[in-house]
Length: 69
Image 1: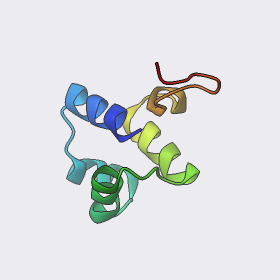
Image 2: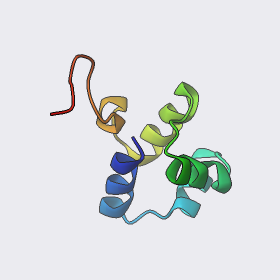
Image 3: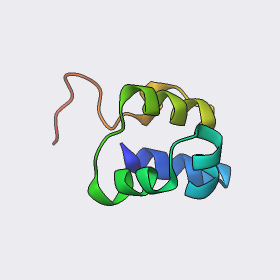
Image 4: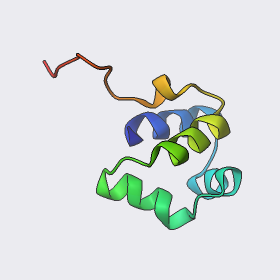
């Protein structure tokens, strides 16, 4: 999921620090999502999507039923 977040951050010119300020999610928590490849809680995913003005679906790597090639 973080790959998609980074794509939108780049497109919108938003840093992780600014995303932290927009969402209220601590900066180090966001950096842990990136470095540890862990997914945020549903609540934090909603905050991230809202801050980036995108849908939750746009954050997802794959939709249910999709498989790696």
